[in-house]
Image: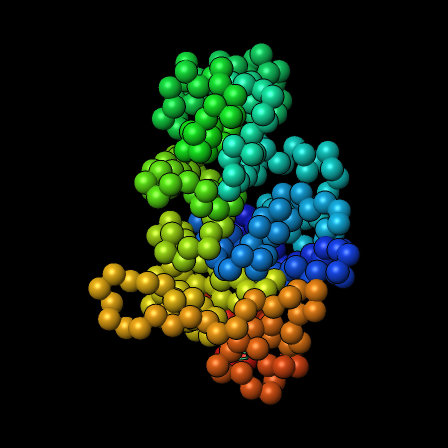
Length: 320
Ligand code: SF4
C-alpha cells in the first residue's frame, strides 16, 4: 500500500562489498513523502542517510549494491526502470544538492556552461538554447550573473558554490529536491542564508524536499516531518513538532537530550556506546547494545516501523 503520493521507499536494503567484509548499510528502510512536503532525515554519520538519498537517485555504484526493496516515485518503481528512463527523471523531476558544493561542480567548465547544461538536460533543448535562462537562474539565487557566469568552481566561495548548485537544481522546478547536508560545509552565518534561500525557492517551485542533516534543530525548523535513522534503519517518523515534544524511540530521546540548549539547567546526557560496525551489526534491534530499555526480545527480533499515533511511527518493541 502506498503511504506517500510522491515517494514511497519500502524494505530498502543496500550492501557494500569491502575487503573487511560486507557492510549492511541499509537494513530495510521505510520512508515516504507527499507532493510539496518536506521531510528531514536525521541521524549520526554512517546511519545510512546519504546512502538512502543516493539509492533514490540510483547512484549506488560498485562496490555498493541495492539488494532488496522498492522506491516508488509517482507511478514508477525507480529500481525497475531502464537507465535511460532514470536519466530522464534525474535532473528533471528529481534534483540533488550535495554537502561539498565546490567538489560537486565540474572543475573544467565555467559556471554558466554548467547551469545551461542542467537546464538543457531537463528541457531536452541544446545548451545554446538554454543559455538565455542562465541569467534568471543565477539571479534567482541572489548571484551577480555577469560576474559569476565566467567563473570556475575553484574561484567560488563555499556559499557561492552552493547557490550555483541550488540554481542548477531548482531551475528545472523538480518535483523532488534531495538536499544532502547542504549547509554543513559552510560558515554558520552563510548556513542561515542558504536555508532561507532554499525555503523561499522550494515554496515557489512547489518542490517536495528530503533534507538530510545531522542537526535535528535544522530538520524540525525546515521540515513538516522528521525521520530519525539509526544504523541503516528508520527508527522513528513524526511531525517536526511531535518529534521534539513527544519522542518515543529511546535513540530519538537520547539525541534530543544531547542537544545543548542555552539557558537550560538540565544536564546534557550523551548516548552511551558507539555506533555499531555494520560489517557485523548487532542482532535484532541494532540499537540494543546502547539502549537503556533493552529486554530479551530486542536481542532476537528487528522491530518493524509501526504506527502508534496518527502521523507517528516507531520501530521499537516497547510500542508493539
Ligand atoms: Fe531499545 Fe529494544 Fe526498543 Fe531497540 S527495540 S530501542 S533495544 S527497547
